[in-house]
Image 1 (cartoon, chains in turn yellow, blue):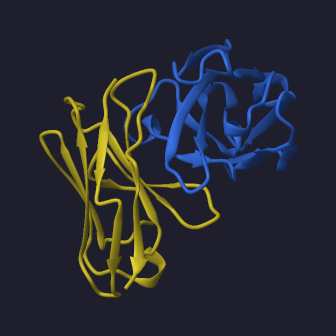
Image 2: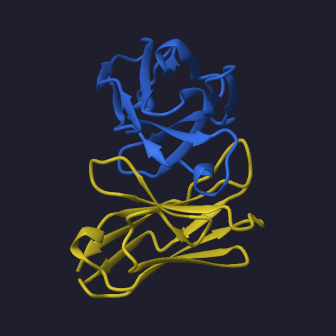
Length: 108
Length: 123
């Protein structure tokens, strides 16, 4: 099985800060990676797919990128509504589609 | 509007059985896998299983196979997750989500999610 190692698990940041979250795949998954945002008490929502394509309606301060088996989600200027937990997921290796461990972004 | 609506919260005792549901609407139900995802209290997301509503073909995560059963009734566009013998460690929030069966780009991902069903197992 492919392991998705997400880091950091916790980020304390202020409004306006740049935040970077990383997921590393244990083997190649091409660009078959998504990022989800989960607000407290809510279901996850698809944020980015194909490693770098923003879901419709997602603000442009979010961006995704890939370098080999390393994937990055960047929030260029953190806004109050961005405080949430973010998960990556690979969809390359069926049938089990692994998630990263999650990154909680909290207000400093 | 695409919707996945899950059944309500459940409180059960260890050893009891349970079936929770996920009803899809606003899209062609048989064109999308229904995937079940577990989230234990304060923890991350775990992919459990998925079912093809058109023919009930199922993929299980080996970590869950044998302990849960996934099924579907396409006549009522509803998928189910079932336990015959609950354990305290089954206490979690369970989500269903859809993924296109013949997918390209965005549809290969879990693009719509249910609201989640909280299952509490306690004596």
